[in-house]
Length: 49
Image (cartoon, rainbow, N blue to C red; front, top):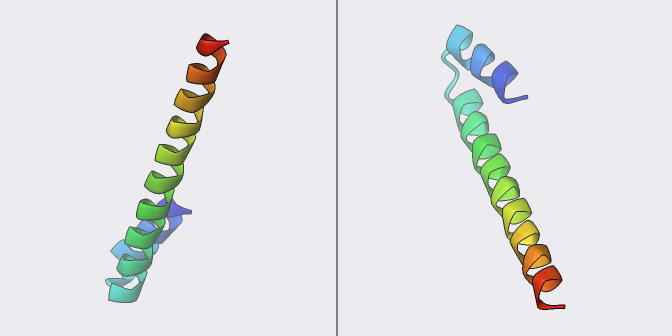
């Protein structure tokens, strides 16, 4: 989805498309960080048992 949004922005120069791209990147980054945190917590719980 990010690749498509970037390509659309690069072809049109539409600022709203660029802002959407930035929101998607931020959302993806937040989701990735949440997944890392869950893995850390899971690993921590497994080593304490």
